[in-house]
Length: 255
Ligand code: 13P
Image (cartoon, rainbow, N blue to C red; front, side):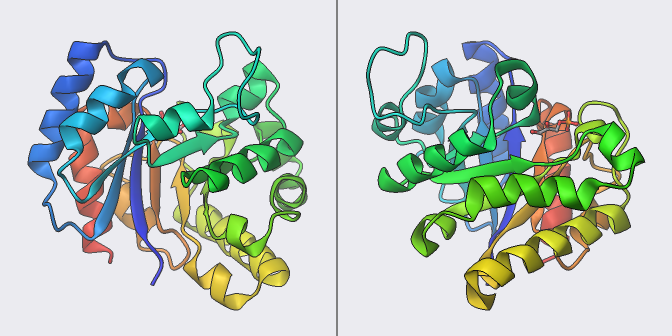
């Protein structure tokens, strides 16, 4: 059975104190035996502290928001996967559209990041999704296929099994404009079929594909009820414990 995941991407928000407070509030609201994998992705400087607080909580994992593809070296300001490993980081979000847009992240590099993450035992949350103009031209399937082909098709089966895919249509991120459950389901199904074609049915069936883009307590339930939507990658609504916990509850009721 594939995992159901609700991940909170805090982006560049929260201080150390805020991060501690939010982590404790979330820990209090999530049952230790929760069948939903809850992932917290705080800013990098707070990863260690958030992990320390949640260490004993079986259902809560922590994620970085990025990593470097190279092992180590003269890359000022960057964070290596080995460093993340030493902080007990469980996951790393890679290829978020904000990183693609502002820091020229591309799919060829993302493939390398997945390889390095797999080597160090950290799971990759690979983000893909089309911008508005592509959706308006009805080219979203070609666009996402191209992203997936470049980033994922040359992975080994072991590396691919280490990936969770997050479909985040760029036009839905932080805009309050969610993809309809049908639009999201159609794309998730397309992604799963594409992965099946390349890596086989068993791997595709076990692949968690989560949705991101203005997901909130009022639309989460309908989104998570879709066959191919295995949870969410939450931005704005993950910054408030009450909203985030309501989204986790929506995932639980849709198991
Ligand atoms: P919002 O939930 O704020 O739209 O952000 C989604 C996102 O980018 C999560 O990675």
